[in-house]
Length: 273
Image (tube, rainbow, N blue to C red; front, top):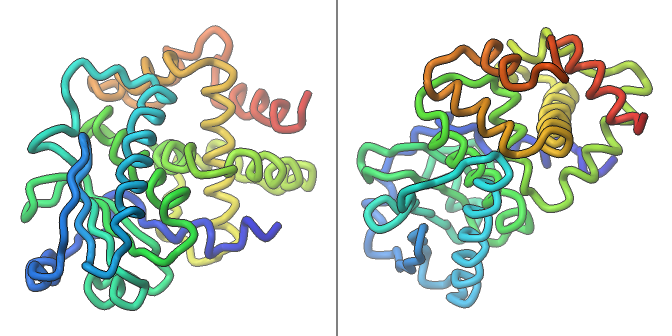
């Protein structure tokens, strides 16, 4: 399926993978123009269409609201506002992005939960790519929102990457068809392995695309079948210090009593049973 060419799956960086040296951005300070929204500040080069920047700001705010609702994250304070707004640096093209940030050529963007030089959350990407507004931007906002929710407590990487993909345009629909085919061929990642799998060490693009697809499929299954509030309760328990495995089973019992039971229910869900 064309949608799942490897280059469409892992082009955005995992949260905290990039440690973007702001030396390049600071050196280019005379080039950056600035546009401020309620939750985001966008920095862009003068040649960028400002109407496009306005649209990006609008979409970013929509994603900010949507992903919080989907993962059951009730905010009781003014998160990501005023001095806490997320800074988005948009380079004009891929060549400039790679040169200035040191990211690999396949990267389309990345995020850090806190950049010490800027004292803020940061998203970096570039213009002139079809994926930015509808895939890269919601992906990185998803990462940052989940990180806000659980803070420094660890979640399995599949949870982080599944949530990050959740608002990408049409992704769930394509993932469902892709995973159904893989499952019918008995070619998927057993949950016991998935829960401990660090895909960042994997070099096989086929395995990478399967990992990302399965991660999103599982998040979709959990939220659609058991609701956002339940997922949020699980995240809060992790945030408060409960290990993920324990927090998950505490919240999803009695419907899910073990991770093998989760795998069986998910397989039936994908197969439409």
